Image (tube, rainbow, N blue to C red; front, side, top):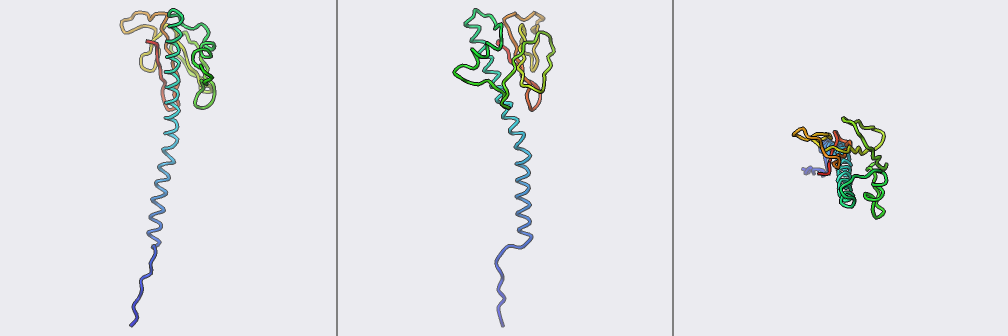
Length: 158
């Protein structure tokens, strides 16, 4: 009587199961990657806004508390020091725009930083009066930027 030898190898069910698991892992990474990249770009935008807020504070220290008159020149002289670039993560330069009226609107075609003088931030929006109803001082400034993920971010020079 001959002994039957069992063949070594994988069954078709085992191979299909491994491929299905690999496909699920690939699909999860493929879905999560754009959200992660969007989050990283928004973090860079928030860092750029903080950088601009610090530059405004520095400018005011050097100019007796006054705000810049020309924001383009301000960006060139205070924000982009040492040959640094001040561009959106998309590679386009920021358009720094002064806004007088509230609420503000964003143009989705260009990366815009909105500067509202005589305002402070309340959440995501600039306001012209504080919680007591007092008008915010002329030397205050709220800077605001739209995020790619959702919403806006607002920082002031308090």
